[in-house]
Length: 288
Image (tube, rainbow, N blue to C red; front, side, top):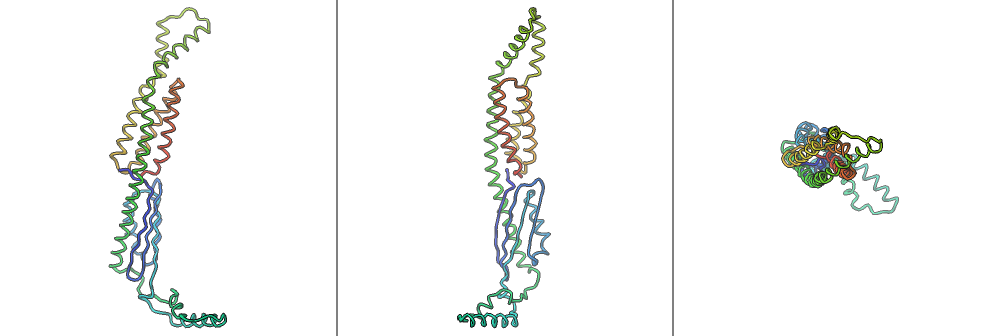
């Protein structure tokens, strides 16, 4: 199953006196590049969270955990601060000739007038809820990656099929290619006024020349690389790096075919194959 390194998830959970929001974003990277930002109350659990994130294997992974604390539910009011705020706002309201109705409710809604007495560490119950939600977020990222990977795999199949089609069109030009090479050599002899040609020697030299231009091995190897690329996509997980190596070998055979082609139509096919392979390489960096 092919996976992309691009993923996203956002989950929330309610703990005793705070709402936790978990956001995970992943992008492509050659290694595991993890950034984990958590509020102070969760910092003691950072190692456990990092261990859970190892499921994502590789990529640039940004994790942000934020909290919204409802201190009014389990905290104490700072009486001196409430009185001070109340008097300040009341004085301003009088100067502006505004109603001071519901003024106390307004002051009590200010988060800094409350002092939390909930402690600085999560309870076991809250940690259980948080860790379960965090695991669900990781699973959601993984599913996102699988979905994106399936899209990329379809794209790879399209490009690989086109390379194979171009490869299959090469043989129709090879007979003409040999005749062109023979004619070129004969024309050379004619233009240099060589009247007597030893036909046996000519054939030997021609065979030697054509052997240097032979692309049979390149075609066979490229066909095998195409098959291996498909097989790896279909059967191996975490195949991004391996597919990169296979694509590199495909490129080597295509380039050698182009340098030996000596035929305009084969060169055109090689150009198309190179273009399709580049499209594959551009996306391979995003495969896990």
